[in-house]
Length: 155
Image (cartoon, rainbow, N blue to C red):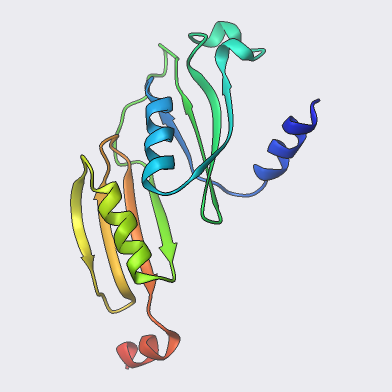
């Protein structure tokens, strides 16, 4: 096993969101990288893997993207028996401690998106917003209120 592969296995430890795309994974990971100031850590295509027969050579078998302190994993699903259907089966929660950062990320991700709830103050958050991006993935953006404000809101 290569040193890079060993490092990748260590990064995958724990619960991480994983999104399966119906052939446009590369477009999606590049969009997320650009819009959320992310870094693509790993990309393996079917053609470069032991699973060559499972999909087109250029399709992504696995990708890992670092966004802030979080890891997002993704792949193309090339199965004809179990096709991927874009839907509302996963939401990704993006937390931030900085209102302007969260608002900027929300604005960036609004490109081609369906905004469900614009960024606004709620009883638990300085800012909270929800959208479904142009790939059909649901996102929640949240900036928690300081603890003292939580206690006042609950009273």
